Image 1 (cartoon, rainbow, N blue to C red):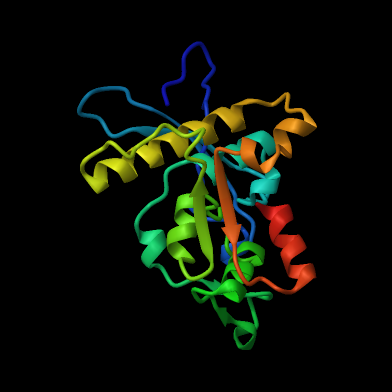
Image 2 (tube, rainbow, N blue to C red):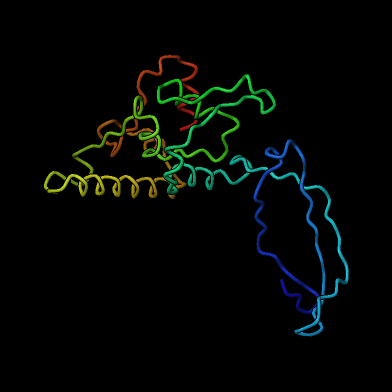
Length: 211
């Protein structure tokens, strides 16, 4: 950045890793001030300082709640997340505690509650694809735009996905929700997200709290 009138501003600094991923080691910023005296001259360093240790945390809980909710449930997700094999790890240093996350109710619970998986994708479409053996999305044909007259099935699916995404965006932007908005009657719901065969009541409670 160029210094103007003795001042320089950085609007943001992005870290490519976290303290957690580096075995608890903190980060330091190295700030160097140099001058270019001519186009063909080598820059001269005037001074350099190092910052105090910085703890870098990527957990969504470290950010604003609404921003966290918006990003995890609404933002587009990469296809590589669908193909990726996730592992639940309670303690990073103990490999024997690793649990491979499978496409079943237990795997869905492990994904939602895994402390080592940061920035979990909770988009309903992603969860329905990734955990297709236990997660389904239903839509209310009386409230969602009728797609029965659309000739091509791909176009019908695209239309339903567009309606779902529009509904998600609208719901997440509405911060002043009443209890009726959060818990509407079944016939008033546009879409229904269903997790099947999660029989353990405590696990089911944790999943509900997460999604």
